[in-house]
Image (cartoon, rainbow, N blue to C red; front, top):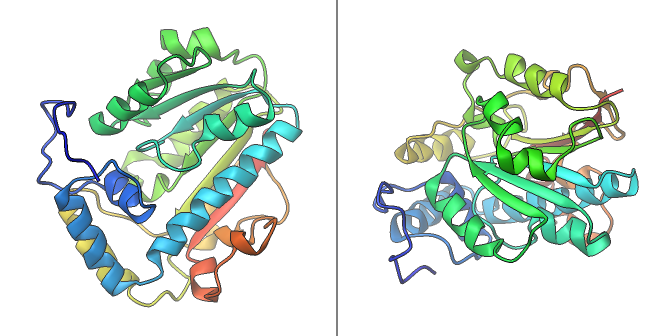
Length: 270
C-alpha cells in the first residue's frame, strides 16, 4: 500500500481511481491509492471473483511468455503494461534467458514512474510513456531502437488493454500498423474482457469503472478473434484466460465462470 507520495508525478490526481492501480490492488500490489482501493472493493462486492480473474490473467502472461521464449524469441514489447507487479514480463523471460530484452509502454504516469524505478540497473529493459496509437513513436523511440531489432521476431503483449480502446480509435487499424512493422515469426498475445461469458455482475462492474474515466468495452469471442487478423492463432485458440494451455491447478479457478471471464489468445505472424 502506497504511503509516501513524494514520487508521484505532479500531473497525477490520486483522488481519481485508475484501472492499472485497481488491478495492482487486486493482485495485492503496493502501488495504489485510497481511491483505487475503494473502487477495487466496490467491484469485488459486485464480482467477488474479479481478484481471481486478475491473477489468472497474470498466469496467462507467464505461459504466453514462456511459449515465445521456447519458440526462440528474445525481445519483447509490452504495451499497456500497467504498474509493475507480481510476475513482471522481464522477470519471467530473463529467468529463462538473461539475454532477453523488454520494453514496457504505458500512457499512465504512475505506471511509468514505478517501472523506471523497478528497472534501475537492468540495461536490458526500458519503459516508455506513450499511447497505444503512437505506433511509430513507440517503435522508433531511442529506447526501443537500442533494445529491439524489429528485423527479428518480437513478442508483442497487449493484455487487458484493448477493451479500453473504443471502436472509434480503429483498433484493428492500429494493430495492423504494429503487424506491418514487426518481423515474421513475431507473436501477439491479447487478453480481453468477454462480452458473451454470461458473467454475473459484469454490467454493474463496468458502470462502476466509469469513475476511472476509462470505459471498458467487453467484446464477443468473434470480435476478440478478429484482432488476430494477419496472425496464425496458436492452439487452443482464443479461449477463457485460464484455459490457454494451463500448466497446473494454480493456473485455473475453481469457478468456471471466472476461468472464461477474460478471453486470451496468442498469434504468430507467418
